Length: 212
Image (cartoon, rainbow, N blue to C red; front, side):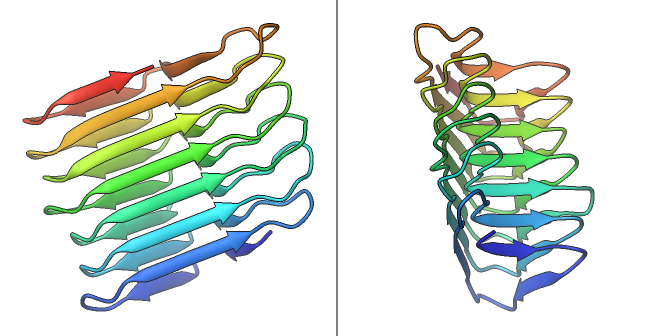
């Protein structure tokens, strides 16, 4: 993998300090992984994460978060993810994958922008997945853009929100999602956006806009 933060390791920015993370995966590897309780956190500064995976087959992710206690969060700064999978085949090649209890959040007027472009393959090559995890803003804008790879099998979607995941704005904030599927004509269950299995997309005062 290009850059890994795991096992309760912390990358922190004090005051208005920003954090910039960038990774490029080797052959068959992820670009940026934050897993197993890894934490990336700023007080009020911005967090920018960019990842481009290696050119292998299966599980070549641009940005991958997983595990309870794993978080990327700010006390009001903007958070931006840009993840690209360069896989050449196989399955589960995500642009951005947020899994298994991990959290991406900012407070106050902070915005979150997540963009994922999936790689080539057969099944589950989805641009951006939030699975059993939380992505949240308070009064800012939460924007998710996902584009699938040219998958030939099943479940090649632009955006998938699943397994009791929550994508939400808890104050005046808004949620915007744009999903595009590049699945081939032989693919099944492709689509721009899917919200399923107890997942929740909501705001309190702001708008929700979803385009698939």
